[in-house]
Image 1 (cartoon, rainbow, N blue to C red):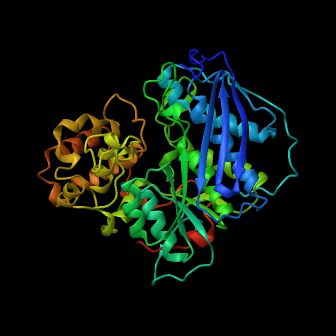
Image 2: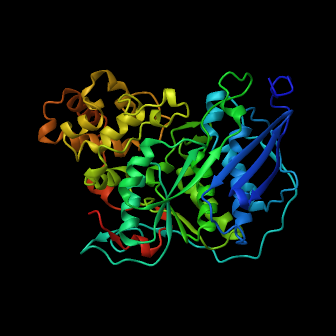
Image 3: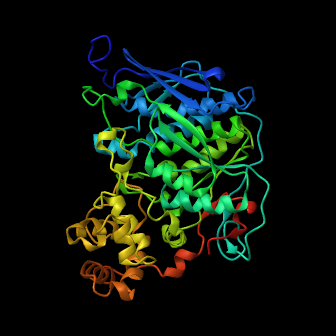
Amino acid sequence: MSPGGAASPGRDAPFVYEGYELDPERAELRCTYSLGADRFVERVTFDPGGRWDDPRVDPAARWVFLLSAVSYYKTAAPTVIELGDLALTASEREFLRSFYVDGLGEFAYRNDIDLDRLDLRGPREPAPAALAPVEPGRATGSGAPGEPGRATGSGTPVAGRPLVPFGGGIDSIVSAELVGRRFPDAALFVVSAAGTRFEAIERPAALTGLGVRRAERALDRQLLDPGRPGYLNGHVPVTGIISALAVLAAVLFDHDAVVMSNEWSASIGSLTDGDRRINHQYSKGLEFEAGFRAVLGATVGPRPQYFSLLRPYSEVWVARRFARLDRYHDAFRSCNRAFHLDPARRLDRWCGECDKCCFIDLVLAPYLTPGALGAIFGGVEPLERPGLAERFRTLLGTSAAPKPFECVGDVGECRTALLLAAARADRAGSRLVQALAAEVAAAGGAPAPADHERPRGDHWVPDAYAAQDQLV
């Protein structure tokens, strides 16, 4: 029921952007939305001392307001979104619509909702003066932007103040290590729920030795009421929201770059439904990165830069480098159950059985011993649990099930990792690993390991960041 006692609105009531407010004294951004009789207010609090008078703050906050709305829109997913007096250019409108339609692709699929008819209504802003486009680099071989060279020493410190959004997984740990070794003024950016800090983020963050910028996101309590009838639920493109928050934090605290940790395969969809490709990781993919860079450049300006450091690389590439960072091995956790908002349901260990646990075990198996992985997973690693065979077959593409709706690598990466693991002497007696390897071989094998060491695809990694790989 709504606060006034009426039933929660269906898809007939439009979702409305009411407005946002900046409160420098509280270091707070307040965003207000409505849906029928229901009114939602989200509060985001940043570290004190920011430069709230910077002219870029308002346009950066506007993007937080625009993208954070998706968490409230999904309660009913109506056909019409009213932008109020928020004027958007044609390119901004197109980007925002894609954020809803593609970013909520999994949500719509699971809830059997058609978002193709989504209508954004509001004033239109003329396009700004044309800016020179920043074309992506193409990672095609030695010397290409984004391809690391071999480190010849401790690395020369580079001027710059990058901000690295950090979630405590292998991707953001590798990025933090690469950036932190070259940029003495680098810092991490951590988003948490109001009043909550996740040990799975805090422990590895402390090990980086970098300072931490923070934002606390207080979702409207109506979203957190498990007994609330009528609201739809499902996955939202949260990385896009975190990206907007990171840009605002970078402006407030004079960071010149927001360095994401989204790798190449984040752009690969989970499945195809009709003509639409559904990607659980949409806001980690290249399409979102390109669109967000474009609208930021036209509104916030050329600084901070926004790019993903790992865009040209595979999960196998990332895992190989993470495996050498042994001081993180007993501190990191990528299992989603470590991040439950309800502390009573939050795990202080890996669950050892979900798709994410299985994938992390699989991708690290070529580079760590079974004993080391057993220790990470609390005694028994997933690859030593025959009951998880079907989960691994799904990751490997040897079952009829589609790729999991989870932040996991693509089939080629998983297959290569498995065959590399199966070739290890200490895996010769692992019945599940060897059985899965035989199935992969029968299904056509896997890309050569060297294919995963070469950068691939488009990216926007600046030369100052791509010049050296100090973890090789």
